[in-house]
Length: 137
Image (cartoon, rainbow, N blue to C red; front, side, top):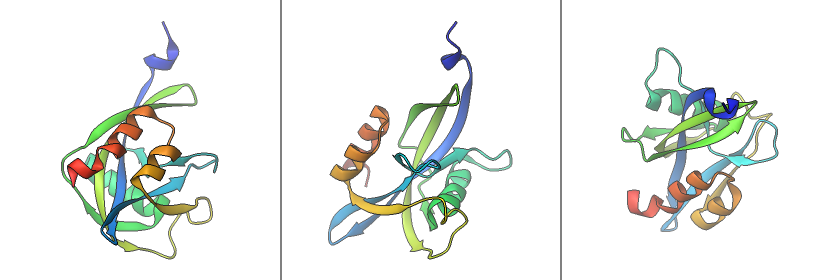
């Protein structure tokens, strides 16, 4: 049995977006190692819904506050430390971008258009979710 698939961790995350000059932009952040571009995500807190947990990650990892859409727009998987992480993805309409946030010293963040976002993220399923954003908004 392949251990990579045996151990699965459920996470939730958001694709933070805004409409800027008539164009959809998403905010990507660097991973905790700083080597990859990712979306804010993390373990689902035991006392929280997936949406609330994802909103908390957006604040902690990217300094973003806003409204999380109640409907999931998809899931994707990635591997980390021998585990399969399954991420349920929600849209976050960004209302506030904070200057200071918990992980500001650890991560960079950047608004990018959809084309750039697709190029930057690694996970094939996440690329597809981002590519489909214009149909979701």
